[in-house]
Length: 268
Ligand code: NAD
Image (cartoon, rainbow, N blue to C red; front, side, top):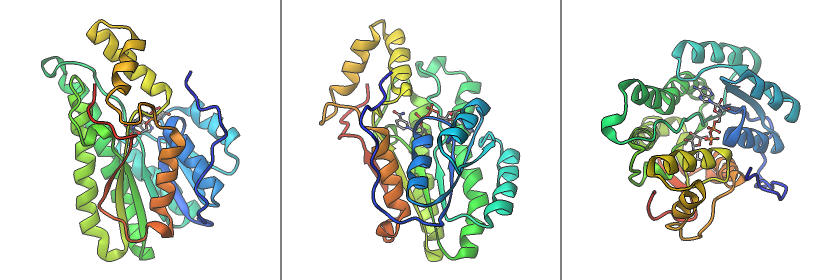
């Protein structure tokens, strides 16, 4: 377990009353983003496919709204937004956080099903949620959308081509939406996390270590070696960037792909 030991501290922005949806907020980065927005006074809705994780989140984040929804399924996204419109009456901030690692394999060994699943969750979910959120934001005359990409959306990532392709797609989607929605004062940005200190980092390193026939520890060392700061970033670094982009301090920032990665030079 690589959880951060110090208590998390969040950017002192005032988001009182802001209505926020964080997809895949039951665990990992999404859960911490939800915690950060709640800590800054926002009303927060999370969704996830894991009911046990949602139940735990309801207990650890008092006041959070939580629904079971697979955001890769447009029908489930539509149902989620029926709930959100009824309870919140609108939406100010959408954090498109859901994303899976996808297969670790050479391109000729990636099945069409694994490719479709990776693109469906990592790109389709963002598209479906934005499609539902944008009319609410247009009606309000403002809004902020934060899409989770990855440093693999700026660099190549061997044996992870579906993931990397999906995360580059997120950047293209972000830039296109920013152009489309700027006149409505709806800002759209992407965060590109590097190697975040989470269980997922361990899982990803372990999967690639097996594929390359080396130990997981050696794989983690190799992954962090081409990082200028030579360390993982923390989950709260990602949450603080999301807070900043959603806050009035980010009012003139849109269409950007912002890395929070310690300066990753290459992906291993
Ligand atoms: P994670 O693997 O820990 O998963 C977080 C949650 O997503 C889980 O609770 C899971 O049940 C939920 N989920 C998965 N598919 C879903 C779906 N279709 N609908 C709803 N919920 C779903 O993920 P994470 O590490 O917290 O990553 C969050 C985002 O950040 C992803 O988009 C990921 O690609 C990106 N990212 C993560 C890292 C990292 O090091 N962890 C690095 C770069 C980018």
